[in-house]
Image (cartoon, rainbow, N blue to C red; front, side):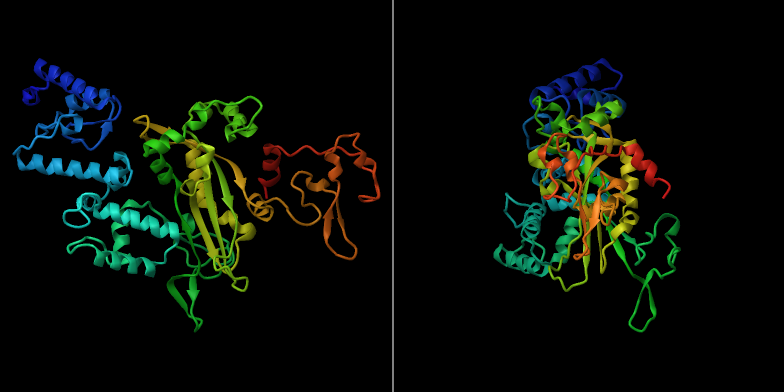
Amino acid sequence: MDKSWMHSDRRSKAYEFGVEAFLNFAVENLLTTIHIRCPCVKCVNLKLFGVGIIRDHVYFNEIDQSYKNWTFHGEPWEATTNASRNVEEDDGHSRYSFVSEEIDMDDNDFGDFGSDPYEFANVIGDGDQPVYPGCRKYTKLSALVKLYNLKAKHGMSDVCFTELLILQGDLLPEGNTIPTSMYEAKKTLCALGLSYEKMHACPNDCILYRKEYEDSTNCPTCGISRWKEGKDSILKEGVTAKVVWYFPPIPRFKRMFQSHETAKSLTWHAARKSIDGQMSHSADSPSWKLLDDKWPEFGNEPRNLRLALSSDGFNPHSSLSSRYSCWPIILVTYNLPPWLCMKRKFMMLTLLIFGPKQPGNDIDVYLEPLIDDLKSLWIGIRGVYDAHNGEYFTLRAALMWTINDFPAYGNLSGCVVKGYKACPICGDDTPSHRLKNGHKICYIGHRKWLPINHPYRRQRAAFNGKPEYGIPPEPLTGEEVLHMVENR
């Protein structure tokens, strides 16, 4: 195929005809019009775009003249002795492609490394380096990712994983690139991970040391020091008394859309066939439909996320004598099909609260950074790349449900869940009775929800000695709940 047009003036007819011939050649060979590598001098085949954007780039930025063998656009590889620049760039592109195939990532995932080109180069280099000389199946990076997945899947300790790496290195031929310790493995893999924040907190759960309290050394509410107290009662400045781990969800949602299969699954709810009278997915629920009707601009975009927040406390040491509590805060994405939304890899850990006592009703203090991010998601995050459709869009999300047991429901919602007024539906009209000998509170009045002519309503001896003629109360609306709690 004639490629002399690549050196022609961009305003000439030869260049124009050459660009169209190149695009037709790419579409015919790749069988797609939306996921094609851009060969302009700025993108150098590192980014995927549609035909229209590539045409604009090639005209505005000029085509990369050293790209003589169109291997990324369907042309068979030919061994040539091009200039060193061309060889280096082709090698870089092949490494880039290989990494993305091995660890199942889209090209746009590597946009996270834009602020650190050296980190990007290291990841690409590890993706091209064979695990031992002559190995064609695994590279250093792909082998390490698979080994680390086994560690996470089977709960290996760091010591066990280090010993496994040492044994693996001894079993492989000399010159292998397997790390010899957990520390070296983490240094290699940390570039692929996403950010997290270690936030300082008041030991009494009063505040997080962020925003206006970021530089404070004492809690403005209770006055206790931010720093841990040593055995000699001397404060160790720099050693925080309590730390909370926060994993920002926005970069993780972006990463989900950068996977072709996951991005497609996130719109499954809109493409499925619903069955009248049957609820096969959360999209059939009244709350989902209410959100679509009340905010149609949100509901018209199937990629907008519907989320649920789940939380509960547990003792990680599995010992009742140990005074330790751990509270994970997890986001569940209900856009996914039923067989995926409850999978472990789609349950997003956002907060980890741990310490000698549980946060209780003060859990809202720790939820502040998550609430800020959820507010940003409701407004919209621009420039999110959808790998399935090959385009950028504005991502929005809404928190629709909470998943927890009854005590945790009280902590998260602020609703009373114990005592005489413990029913969230009945509220102040909760029918309750304190047992004379057991000194416990029991709840009566369940017969209100039976049909008005049900025989149980007239029975006395089997219940509290009284007939029941009441009607069930109406649950509070969201506006009524907001009015009750907004000034507290």
